[in-house]
Length: 345
Image (cartoon, rainbow, N blue to C red; front, side, top):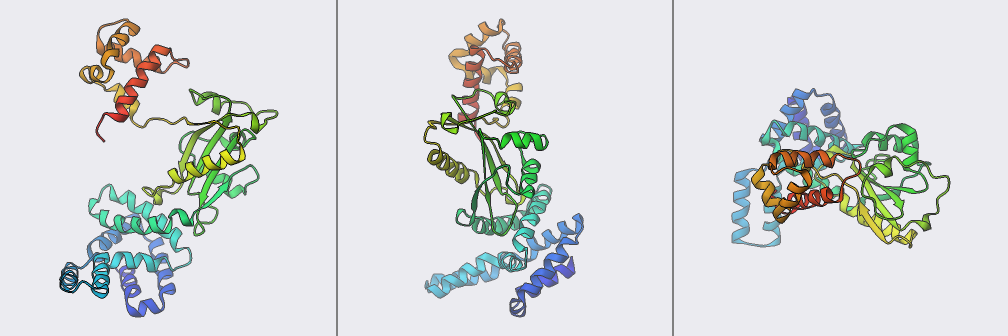
């Protein structure tokens, strides 16, 4: 670890700036050889010894306050930025540097859960990655069965919502009534950053099962579909967690679909509600009454008991039925609306 830190110091020096690419490559090679414990120590060194210098920040702030001009402002900004961001920028000069930093951040996030003091390191690295991976640098591509196999393999590996059960399942998801789009970045060739899967159907769907389990169509006329169901979206790079791609991708896909398929009139999503089932399982009776309001009587009547704890359990069981009764669906929708809109974050 001390050897790697020394290389990083040299990389930050004037001499290091002159031969930056070679030093950056050497630093990343050394980092790649570290054990998990050594990585944690290196992250700790970055947190403790490569941050902004308080004395320098104070001095440059006073200089800017006394003479607020472009030169003093730039000196203050440089002092506040500190050495870590400059180090990450110079490491990025190495071939494959961006990929290595993305991988390194994934490892940093794993260490962060046990070492909150590493948050400052993550803040600096995330700040830079947000700039390097902004929408202007992203490449938008449609994914089909004839996309290179190395990319298709990544879809199977990275699918985070509805697991892809091998090549036959993937082929079904790329059939004529399906669409798949992804963002890529020039610095990570062949590596999707995020991808979304869409089903072209007639009418809105109330469940994912019929979409996932639908057989391969013998023929399909895309112009006959009036609805696009966004049924899965997966972030592929753990090291880019917290950097938003989803909104940009969904909006661009919607525009693409509307342009290519003018008959589409409805755009919908089938997505799980994180934590809702767990919340519902542990819901106490007072909060249940507050969430359902005037519908509490409807639940008692539908579940056949005035014991609210038992009624809640029966409602949860009824939610697991393949065909949900309209009354049960309405109760669940009201509870879900309360969960999403009324509870604090």
